[in-house]
Length: 415
Image 1 (tube, rainbow, N blue to C red):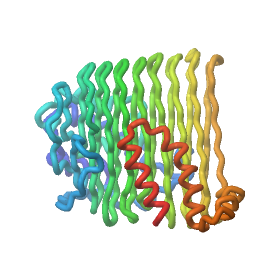
Image 2 (image 1 turned 60 degrees about the horizontal axis):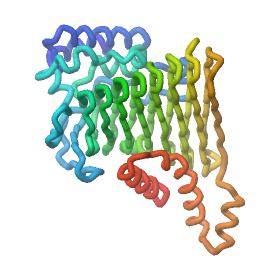
Image 3 (image 1 turned 90 degrees about the vertical axis):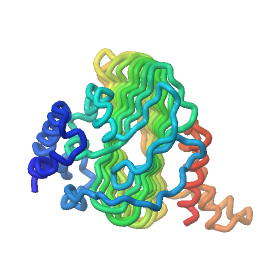
């Protein structure tokens, strides 16, 4: 079945079916996807990742509720829970000036909140997987912050899956000077496909922290896209922790549209068995006077395969910018593999840019030193891996989230 045929079959059942602007958005997205289809390895951006495992599961939409919901990761957080892509538990009471609701709720009761923003982040408009998401999405979360609003407690969004395919569409709208912390947690059991998109629009001076914890089931496929735009003096701290899933693609497209904007995009990927994780990051310095940083580190064991693609674009006349990217990977097995492709495209001359990538085994000298002090080999190896990951984890500014991340990393290393 084609996407267009499936969409027509589902048209009356999708939330917001009576909104002409939303119907047009979905139809246009379906046309964009059908023009290209799922990307294959002939497409440079997908050269190292095959989507064949998901091609027969795109239209098997999961609909069952999951009653066994785990407790929150963080105490006193404002929390939404989605099961198989559909809102299951609403958030607790929020401060005035903050709206946190399901996307389907917004379509039904507050369409004006999203009408001019949904699907409008330019960095994600031409991408095939976000287009597929836009055509089929039934739910997701909407977070809208009025200007100057500061949300002290973290906002935790749990996506719990156990069947079929789901397409969460998330939208974060931060007014001028607003501040908030969002934790997206992806968790599941069984075999399923999740294709999530989060759009971020940050007005001048807004400060956002977004932390993504990906713990999908061993047999699951996960494609997550972050598309964002930062106005002048807006700041985004983003951290991706990838632990689960059999086939994973974590993609970021970020446009720095004003002077003083700052994007910090870091991540850790820990893989074993035959897991595959592709981290793809594109940063567009559209104007001068802004900064971006990328630091991704991974540890691979057995026959795991990781990909890092990081590209920084500095447009013509975007003077006085800084853009840095770094990728480091530890290979614990001679069968583990990393394909790393850092890239700079610089069209201006007054810039400070750097990129680098390294891959190798644990430091034998350090391992020998620890063992000579009476530390067993397994413990010594774990100490070296912990120190390696800590160099990126140290850049997480939220102490509570840092504690959660440390615990998850330690559990992976001990298992």
